[in-house]
Amino acid sequence: MAHDSSERFSSFAEFYPYYLQEHSNDICRRLHYVGSLLVLSILGYAVSQQQWALLWLMPVAGYGFAWVGHFVFEKNKPATFKYPLYSLLGDWVMLKDALTGRIRF
Image (cartoon, rainbow, N blue to C red):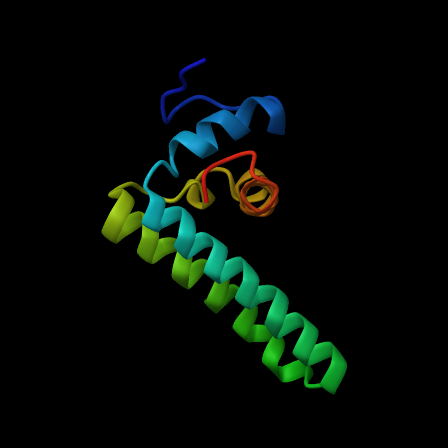
């Protein structure tokens, strides 16, 4: 089901195909993966070393890599601006799907 930018999604299951369509560029997807893995690394390090001040780097790493992917390679506006919660969930589901071979890495 195609959606234009003015439509709202009633569930994540409805949103996710749109999300994948907005991440069709391989480099954009890979930059998302790098950002997500950095977020996990920062979180793990900050918690294990009790360096709580480092947690502010999580959104910088996650969104920084993702937004470069969108603006430079995908040439579209990140879904985060219109669907922040579904988009955040989409990042993690897309990473899981890539790591499990469900979608192209």
